[in-house]
Image 1 (cartoon, helix red, strand yellow):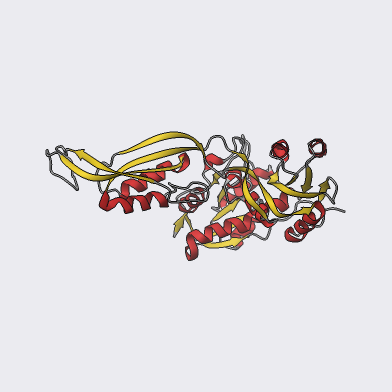
Image 2: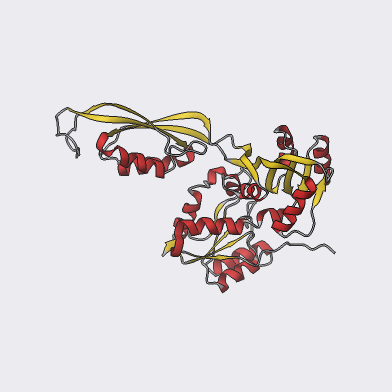
Length: 368
């Protein structure tokens, strides 16, 4: 049976917690990382009804988009709604995990799904992270074991540049070493200088994947103490950041785009600014609350921003920047999290993990 740690680490492999915003609270919020999990419930929010749903389906882990805790807690009591939630989760031995802005920033996050939903092409991050640097790894490998080390590093995330993977540079050379007393060399003898035909293998990778790559390289390398160098780079990891921006294959009116969104996301009505007949081609998308990226969208010449949770003055600001807005609401822009994460877990674990998609999350208000 899998553990909480195994499942959550499989998610963090491509959505590291370092990608979360400073104000956020992602990761394991309540629970025991070493506890066993046979069934996981995927939800947008975590409330008492979600806990009941998890218990009804015999789930040991809940993976949600929104953390049940954002701010430091001074008291946990049954007289407080948040306290009741935490107490019940602990009593029922439920593990609570949140994949929030780290998931949003991932290249395959919610904004990317929304961007693809409306048919955007040439999609890139709207607001790129500035703290996702690259590292160049240089490792010296005997020629017969080159493919094994190269394959291990590629599988660990090294050598990925935009839409290309397995990127590397190779140079032939010779390596020399003398095994000393206490060594267990796979090549050579104690006290004798050895010269070996080796290949200098260079690959770049995100700093967030460095530890995993080093471990993979050492496991695949034949040497007891492989020689390798790490160089910090100024390159930023492509595709990581909040929001997405892209182009339609053919221009559409705002009214046409709004109609498509209502149908695809099952929304009764939308808030729209700008003339409904305005034809647009370059569009920015931000799942959840995207008001903070209005200026960024305008600066990148987006004609339309699709997001949620917009306020009165947000519409005024966008109008002054000649940026049209479609407010699809926080809920409708993020409820797709359930399908996204369920697909990720299914691809990783297959039949080893039973995945339950919550049907208890719903819009927390009504229009009358």
